[in-house]
Length: 112
Image (cartoon, rainbow, N blue to C red; front, side):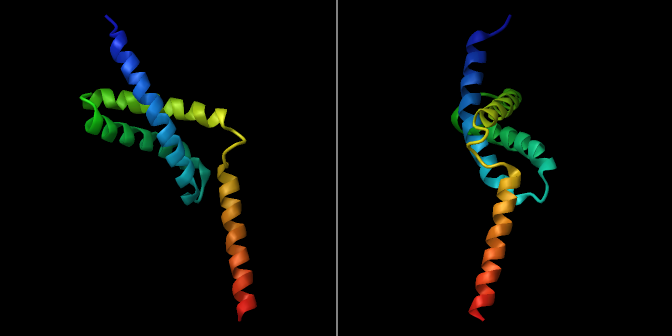
């Protein structure tokens, strides 16, 4: 029999974690040289965050915390798509880093 109360609890925790992990991935995805690994990185961040969160704040066991991580990964993707255009894409982050580095180089050359 399906445990509806536990499913509700799992989805509520997933919603909270989705907002946290979406922000974390958004802030750190500029560290990658290529955008091809961001999805895998996001999944790993969601799984690790869900395990740590469940161990710290709930009595949910390890296998169920993996489900929460999977649900939060799917939810974070939905949040990202909802905010599309309002948050920076990977290419925007990389381009802004390049511009900043080029501006720093120009300033350094002028100081010499």
